[in-house]
Length: 605
Image 1 (tube, rainbow, N blue to C red):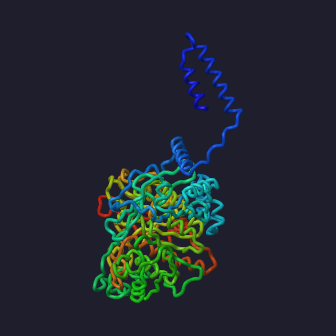
Image 2 (image 1 turned 180 degrees about the horizontal axis):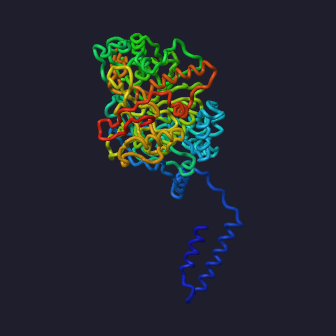
Image 3 (image 1 turned 90 degrees about the vertical axis):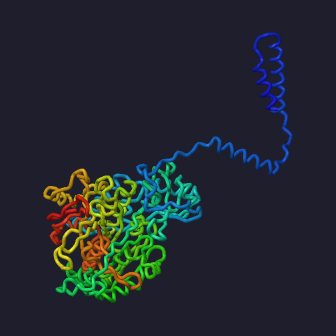
């Protein structure tokens, strides 16, 4: 009936308002419309027939179509917008990742400049030997009062995950990161991206899942999030630098060279390190002391090789705790793929065993994942070594690097010490002469960790003075500003040394690295047991870092034995007591290229 009224109105409108008979037609239409309205409004309608199931389904489908047609798309924000490359020569793109494959991501929540400044101030104050609060490290609860994100940020991400049907997520103890486990299909919907499997071009069995393009979040969620890992970064998979030992020792003046047997002649052994650096081995662990090594995909350990090393060198290296997916020692004893991890375990254990060692394994090659795990632990290792890194320019975004920096600031404020190798390609970095500029190493460039470079003995196989290893990573960050604890040292270096061309590096107020160095060059590689009990020589700053970490673990043991707090973030203490360290004043880090930074008296890169 109402449709008929509408037709009459349309007809009425279409009739000219002037001319013969126009008024009579209008009058008839008005009367008829009045009758129809009376019938519709006054008389009760007949009862409708019961809807059929098919009719109800048609109605529901119609509503869905109408809703889709008139729905307003949710605006989305591109995350890490500076990222422009979504592939890497070392990673081969395979098929789309299976939709039901599980993956983990970490939402790094936005933090205000005020909170960032407060965290840095607390850390530097507690690390300053001149402060009345020196080494009064914070508990998780105390630190969370500084670092926790706004409740609205947590609520926004939580509601977003719930809307996707994702319920397996958790806010970390410091209140600034949310770790979520979801399927690939859920991740693709969440981030508006396609996820593919990538396999390493040179390392068998190494696989990651990454987006092949940019990712985004709904605008209201993006306001709460700084970045999401691990969707974009293609990690550098380290290749151990090997050089076998000699049949006989070159330097008969010290028995340290043959202390692990003939297979380790001319290779650095625990005895060589003891003689050079003057530390004494310990026979038992100090209560409360601990140390850890960070290992990534495919780098496991096996007790067969560790036992072979202990038997040969008379030390007590061991793995006492393990975090991450299950260890796979077969890859070590059968395929010899664990050299990097065994170098870490045997070196730090050879220096500081029997201090309990935690093997922290991550399949994701994620530095922020490692730092988040470290700061979540109730009894995290006090002294830690990380032999892993890329160039800063390979990290894809400043948001990622700054997020990692924040996580390591938190670790330091909790009383944890983290040493990170500075790289094995000199000032030029892993990208070499690309762009004809130096490429500082990351995460070694973070000011809140201790970066460790490498040296050689000045005379091969002669335990004594050291010279710079020409491929030791070092330089000035393009991302992080110079911390106050090293400003006078860097200023002195720049005013006295012969510097490379200013076009090659950041000449501004930049963080300088490394902070310390130790033996690590190829003149005398380190002795390592691997591949089911074989021995070889391995060199690089990947050896320097666990050496330094082991020595500082011994210092922690001394502090704890006297009822004192552990070292925690140690850089301010190192620079304030620089006279306690050997000064390497010869060599440079040009790494067979035409330029690098030269060594000089005092600190140098």
